[in-house]
Length: 426
Ligand SMILES: CC(C)(COP(=O)(O)OP(=O)(O)OC[C@H]1O[C@@H](n2cnc3c(N)ncnc32)[C@H](O)[C@@H]1OP(=O)(O)O)[C@@H](O)C(=O)NCCC(=O)NCCS
Image 1: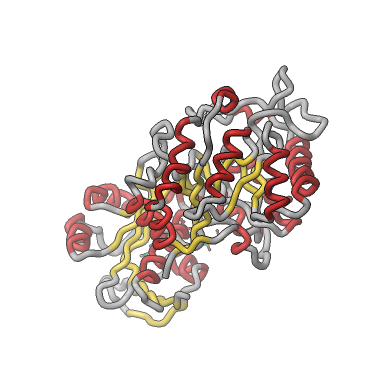
Image 2: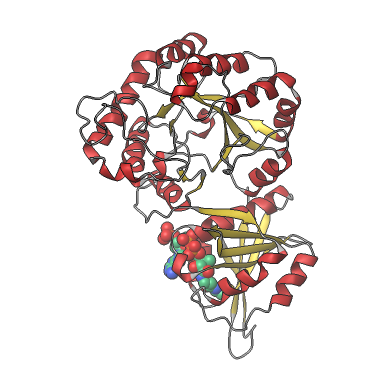
């Protein structure tokens, strides 16, 4: 089954040249953009809103709390001497100015930007997103989630440094607000940061989207370039790439053939209960490689559980040779959790282990989702796993929808039993 992908054109409203670039792509026969993110407080916002109103094209509200002037009146803590938002230094990921924001002022400004959208577009946005991923910070995330919850609209999955912020995502999950499951940036040469050059690296993008569950979002930045853009954005010539790729058609064709293109409306569903959780930044998932084996062993030894036997490196190396799929979770380039699934004859989760100092913040859940996705993509309907009992992993498995289907007395000798668990995947 094809993975669902929202392709969002960012910065609609930024200025005339960007508006024209986005409209050019939207109206091209090769268009693949399924969503546009409309800025409420930029020089071209009014024109962009008019286009959305007149064409009825779906748009999300792109909250902007880092550039141009706020829309609300009481904004003492949000702005500098020039009346504009305090800047964030995205090149060095310095968002410290957000710490100075007063909670009430942030909430009011978010509401004012929402009201601007209603007034100018005439209907609710498909979703709420943020311009520079400021929603990765709890200061912005919490009021944003409140608004999204009361208005029943989805949001972009909170991420920080353009990658996944799993604990913040868990927070959103538990609020009942729908979110995308992962965010990718389709941009060549963006300061060397996590961008996918769609022309050169489509295969990597396809592989990475395959690794995560649910609906993903690919953010693209179409635009023409003019003097005005140079003054207000560091991203200038790069914006031309998506326009050109759309015109040439090959990348559009690939995007259509690999993905089921949807917009944010496809995410809206029922609400769940609310609970707070610790926010943790910068945890990303990757496909595990044989070179990761020593780090995996280290994780296994530090997951807070006394295992019946020590896991030898040769065992993991052999499993790689036999084609087992591994997923690793990294924080600051360090592996802090891993899991694997053997899909040779039936789907069996072999390993799942998270360093104790990173447990309880959603890492295990994220790895498990990726493993179940792998099984799903191979056509399996059931996945099972065997764990040493008694362990907290059994609580975890229950939470993940597994049921206990069997019991091995003394499986590991020395009186150590095991239990067998199974889940049905949809
Ligand atoms: C089990 C394990 C993989 C879970 O990973 P994790 O990243 O800590 O789990 P998450 O943060 O995604 O938690 C998901 C759910 O698991 C359960 N859970 C996780 N840790 C738990 C703990 N210490 N006690 C009770 N429940 C726990 C909770 O239900 C939690 O959901 P909640 O936070 O909404 O209550 C990890 O803790 C681990 O590696 N443990 C040691 C390995 C082990 O127990 N092995 C047994 C023999 S094979």
